[in-house]
Length: 233
Image 1 (cartoon, helix red, strand yellow):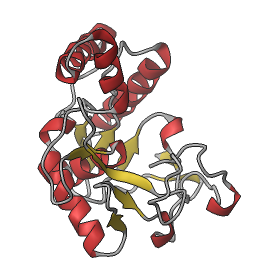
Image 2: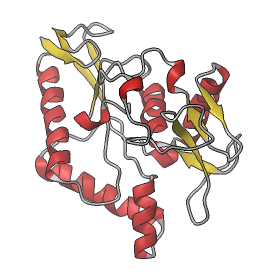
Image 3: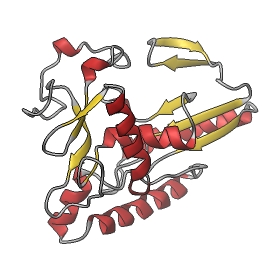
Image 4: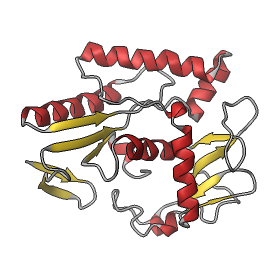
């Protein structure tokens, strides 16, 4: 069986890390609205892949998250005079119902970001300890993209040829314009959690990494999602 490897940019034979088993993670939705047809296509495609691997005799462990804390959720809640938790719960339920209508199998593991805060903080602390991340006075914590020599390998993009601010907000506290937030300091009216760096919440880049590590272990065999996620991940 050949699969396309986003790291090497070519088709390669599927060789499981553990013989006969596949650990598979597919990025779930940010639950601030109904999903659209493009979202559904991604989830349906990976459901077919999962079913085919099972048909071929693999023991597949499939995890998919719900991102239930994010700027989009907070903005939607503020616009409607609701709490972020209410918005996230409404559209989490709507997403699951839509997947059932499509006949898509439930994941074996469906973690929610707001219930994994401790695991995220542990991962951020480890990255700081190893020199891959740094806290700043405002309470944010940033990942240092220049500390990872393989950053950009999936998308094939050269950081020196990209425009600062196109996908990452420019901030004077950053060591490099392309550094991105692993932890965001709390703002008035936003959901937040205590942390070693002050009250705040995770950046969405942190969530999948922490949940994969906790529930599937690393490395995994397949990490799926929309093509637009390849570069920031």
